Image (cartoon, rainbow, N blue to C red; front, side, top):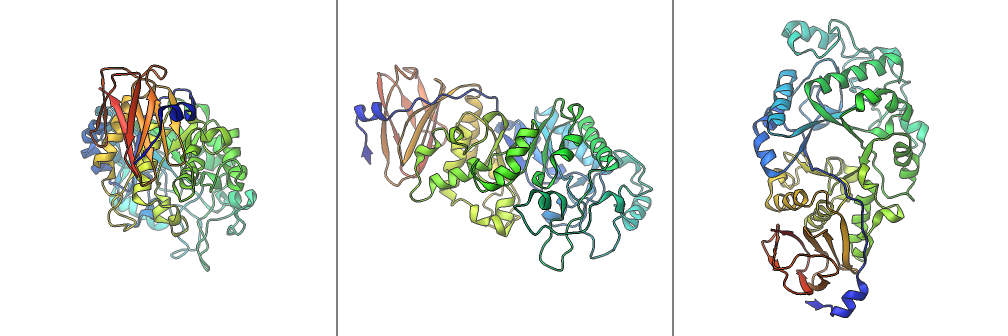
Length: 462
């Protein structure tokens, strides 16, 4: 254990104060069947989640998780996760439990079906015939399902993206696998496509959806996004885009894609700058001091437009991103940071072991430490943040008088002294750690918080 003397602690202390923000946590129920989400609605609410993001709801086929990101038809919900009736029941069940439903939206492309046909008629003859055979009229959201939704004129030319630093290529050409894959048919932003996408969003809103995650937003033009997400669509909804970057404002992906998205829309976005900053901080040689105010130098998004996380589904499920997986202890520290800090809407990813990582994220939504983080997060909402002390190994910050967070990435424990009079922590009240049940009872001006090695503490005032 390394001790810091009171004078040193006083000199080293930083007073970084942020704006308060209401940031209720989102459970990303990745690839859960809609019926499972409905069955667990009360449990989800009792755990402290306020919103649930579910996998794309439209016509798609194939049991693989990635098949949900290959739409065949917007006009009906029918896929291995459930149908329109299941989706409506789920939304209602969540509403009754006081939880909102967010929907994952894929508007850049349609399903890659070149392996079974050579036309661009969607959903195609086979699917249209199945509608007639199965009698799905009661499941239709909108439109005439006796005819195709899209045809060849609704798609851009069939050319794969080869230069991922070119904005034009990324936003006008196809996402392709290894040759001879012809890629995902890239939708044009013509009037018909825009009208159908807007109608689909309106139907989901009518069902009760209050948030939209825009998948592959970097592959859509800003013009396309703004034509679809009109003021009418955005009214009463939370829209956020997925634009993967490998850094902050000094990064080429940020400058080409995320920066313009934030500038020319009023949407939120995944905070990949902060995600990458946490990687730098937590690896060997990184300094926890760089988490004091990462937004000040472009390494985090504005807290009012940020979706924060320690893992998203793309990271473990795509070989090109798996190098971004934290080790399990660092991931816990990263999640405690985003759940403890002021700014950003935390997203908690929970799957059914689709990545085959020994169930690492299976049922994560109800893991004991995640429950503790949710308790702290919900208990300190609307409270400002002030950093009390930090160095290369640790950071200690408070949420007004309501709670204190300590994160220590190093092996040795740290004693950190705090002037409770200056920093307005209440005396003769228990501050109980929601992760370990450690109790700090403050009874004098100077109080010592101990942060064990490789650990997080989230002391919440009782």
